[in-house]
Length: 252
Length: 272
Image (cartoon, rainbow over all chains, first blue to last red; front, side, top):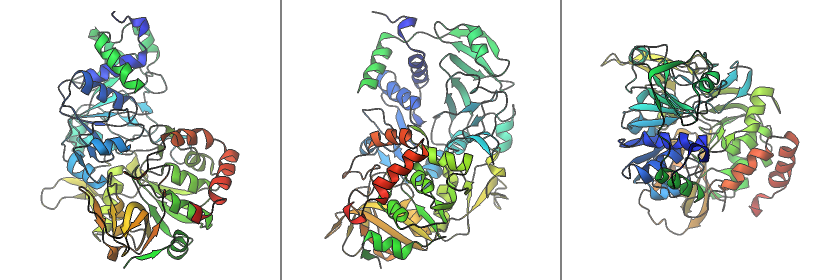
């Protein structure tokens, strides 16, 4: 039995696409939620040697269940090494030892800068969000950043209410000027498709669209005039292997 | 030399109104029992310091304990936002508080600088963000390489409170599993309290275990289950359902207050 577009949810496709990005990756830094699910799926299907690094200091964690928090007991019990928070940020993240980081955000702008601090004014916010956490330094120093977020007009915005985390700043050379060692965001994976920075302008361009999704729908749900790549690809639907592994993982 | 005492006595002696207090524990070993005792003893005007305010500071802020909050991530890990934390910032309930926020790297380095008795921490970070306009951070240039870096003031809380798995009868403490910034917080603070799951005759040293010697700790108090709904690896499990329950309960001020009255104010410390 092969899966058809109607049998697969948009969230499942998003997770499967994120997992595929980790085929060649050695080390991945992950937060909770969909990034964690994607990384566990990648270990099951594509890359059993993938090293999972969680902010809580667990390096090489091999959880059987999807953890609710970044510090669940199973992460500590299965880790190759457990380090303190200062060590995690200075020796491992800051020193550039992690290849890929998965990040989320409440707002993303056309240069893949991220807001997870406030909606509205900082002093009198309409919505107070959790704040920076590890994101600014993770995005500065990890080899590359993959952003995972829902595709919606209120998420993909022309201008952020607050710059929590720098992606490509205001365009080419921004990261170099700021002295960042990592390459910055290489993809924004949503439930509708994948946006990637244009190599020259660094503005996000739609490069991949998920099965059953129309381009107009993607444009409608993007808060800026979205450029579509001339080489736009249709996402390969999740294979039977990917889907059954993902569903089994979520059922555990 | 650490004094073995009761939790109630330790809070009464070590924490005064207006103090800066750091209750640490990064997802693991969060000192809930001690935080609840601070609420029960009616402390006010505290500067609450903590990387991840989590449910514990949501409860303390909602009960009016705080004057100021210093933090780096105010969320309910894996679940969503913190509703009392949001309410105090968005609406000033129960009363307005000041905030100072940082990144995790910034907070961790500030604690490490405090532990080393350095005036400041030096690191890469903050540049290009809006946070730099709203927090305490300064630019500096490396005198050797010319690289542009940032400096942050060391954290030197009046009191650090952490939870650990065990202590011996002399007050030496051992914790294992995710170590967070607990050792740094204890060493950075003027006074410290460690609550423990159990007191043992002799510490059985564990691989990866962190031992904090009794001569850098002010007081040790036994508090079995004292990190619930967080956990103490090997002794209690994280109560993930409670973290989900809190997301629903804490949205409403009255339901929150009622729950705290019944489950925190109405409890004797000795029964915990």
